[in-house]
Image (cartoon, rainbow, N blue to C red; front, side, top):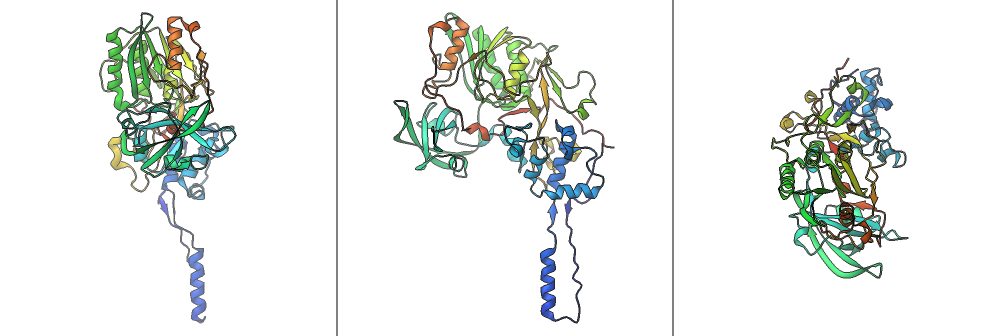
Length: 509
């Protein structure tokens, strides 16, 4: 496999061909010089493009399917550099070299729906760790029927956030920001723009219609807010059965020890059944998924949890057992995992359930009875990792190597590297994991998370206790989501292989 290093990563091609005639009039000479300056090519910095191409050529899952990433794509160094210069915008360059990326070909034709690039890798890393500029309000947006106007429904309030101190809660509805009605065109600027503080114009449902109620709620975004993904954990006793309930919204390593303590409490309380609520969980760190699965099934370190499948170039270098991850007996920090050793687990899902959440479901399926409640999941069966311009470390991001990252190129990329199979060899769920018992969330009755009367939890409890015939949970008001606040989170739809994958860049010929 060829590797092309740029001898000068900042290429300035300047041609001066004035051909001045000393006998010509001065004014003509000045004009001629001005024309030459206008015709001189601009200096093109292709450091970001070079880094992206090299990392994608080595590690991208679909590398062999992308002609522009082929090992023999370029016959000469000049041809390679010309290719990099053809797209001066690094962001556009990245998406163009992905395999039929959704951003380029649209949702219907997309193969790659989840690879992405970020201009500043530090912002990328922070957001992947759940640290962002946020007021703690999480919501979903919907279109009014037959209109481009938009309304929002609060799904939850993050713990210890600005929103948690205000008069706003799950199920509340808003239709405007700072006096402007939300619509398909302006909602991004009004809700996700640079404004630190905004005021929501609230509404309510009256006779099955959303009606403005003249209430206002002012919220302020806080820099470097770290959202605790453990939103609710409690033990419910229903029909003499102790049920552990965990509302978990992101696989974040910073909270692994607290997560382990939650399962320790479940264990000490003697829970007999467990409900994992992943309805808004877009994924995160795979090592945390291993921890949760081990807490459910047991610390059976000889049993395979996942087998990672990479591109053929990498896969061909593996020895037997490479890419495999078993269940674990300890957290990443070394604490003994509190295991419940269950034979069955109930998981609440929606179309926002993705990646590491789906990995837990799929990885547990060969060992325990996974009963899925809600709606079909996103269908992200690939994993990724963060790359930065650190050639000596094969472009893998390592927080201990910040000083080695190219100071002239701060771009970070998060490409898909492969798919995770479970112990049965199954990984084919790009269309999502289908629930055993289907129920959509009711916009008019979202309920309180963790409360036995909340519709999705109520259905789950009814399946646990065998009293399903006694309740009618048919939703009165449903709609297709236009956008969700978590859609802009970097750790949404991500399975991060950090801490599990140790690969070197393939040898170059």
